[in-house]
Length: 390
Image (cartoon, rainbow, N blue to C red; front, top):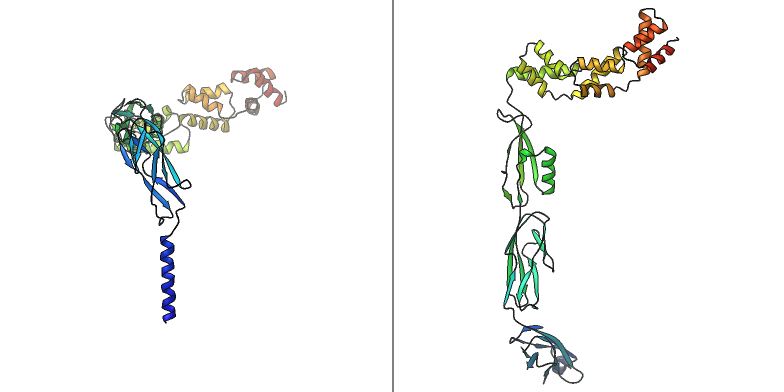
């Protein structure tokens, strides 16, 4: 037991002696590397190892006209740069560069406030005294607006932020930046233009519809955020309500249902559909409501009617066009209907010629004249004559 105690006692003594006699290997200088003229700061020595003892430190400035040093306390004399050295001996010493700057007397940004659109860019400039004083830029909210080292602002999202120009001695100037968008009057815009405006400005547009006795069908009744309002918050949504026209009477509602029934069974022009509804006993107003709201594509109705005619009989192109005009289609609709049939007019002429010959006897010239009368071209008629064996 006595031997064990003696052993640990000896080890403790050795440990204490080693700790006390730790040899200094190197040093470094810690503290501010920038001070203003007439300003001061304290530099401290960092030892390696930390338990090593230092008996004497010699401090020196490379240029006392710029910075003076006394026992680790540095004092700024004039603007410039000097090196401070801390020396223990020839082998152990450390240096630190010290920049002395003239204190900022004033700093001003050319624009105290800015209103920007989304993705807009602007340049800010600074007037600082003294003119060669250094400063940096920063933004309180980078998600709203960012600023480069050259003072270029980029508006990134809706909101408000403070752009700050800060001198090295923490004097600052600020510009309040607001990123917003003014809501337009959507009533003067097409649906395509409204959609593009929403995409360009990162605003969600909702579209709904309702009946209105004062706003015509397809026109805008209201918008949830009034025109001229500035949006400054992220994630705003605008609802636009389009008019379905006046709320239909019972007669108008039934005329609309009847119109849709007719369109499922055959091709109608707007004119012929209205006449059919009036024939069924609906008033002119009720019939017109049914026609206006049935959702028909009149071009496609003309195309369907033209194909129906060609399934039942042979037609020359002009003859088919005239038939569609007679049915009440506009010329543009009739032209569309004829052009989309895909008809081979030579074959139509041949069909017509065969129909004539089944119903009666024709000489070659007589048959040719009849086909020309029907509107076929001379070349189409000649094709038909040869096709039937003349």
